[in-house]
View 1 (cartoon, one colour):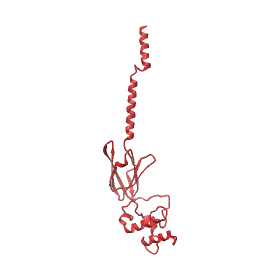
View 2 (cartoon, one colour):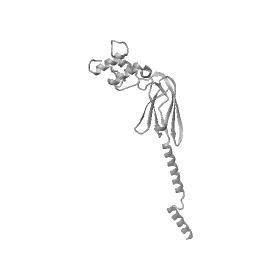
View 3 (tube, helix red, strand yellow):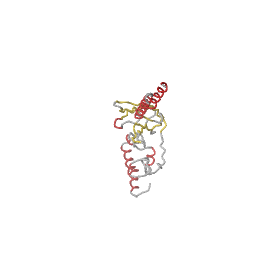
Length: 212
């Protein structure tokens, strides 16, 4: 009879959880795992597809969980072309290199009250990148290769002629004229090469005075 009472008492403790403290331990462990996973999700993340590109080939680095206000770059044979964000809210920085050989990028950013850095090394091939575009870039007068002819083409031609170091084919500006743009700009057949007369003829075309 005494043994039955003891068994009943033990069973009662099991049912109310008093004799099974490991349940509480398991709950704490689950909490720790969840906290670790949450912390990992908040860690900065950087995503890049590969480390070898052609000259002038744009490539992007996706950055997650980093404040854009506290991010900066140290670039060697590489330059930032644009900054945007994707549908998931990630920052997307696009770069390109003008010369073949090695290219280096250091990303400095702030996280959790400290300054961190992410380093990348790239191999830039001798071959020049040719952009594949669905719209027709072989359009007479289309200096900026956007598929249409307007005053922005005239402006780019004048900039390329006046300041080739910045706006010429190998210029340092992001939106300098390209080889295809130079071919499109050469609309005045009476003069060899791209000159001011090409810009003037495009202006006259926009006024409806001539055909290209």
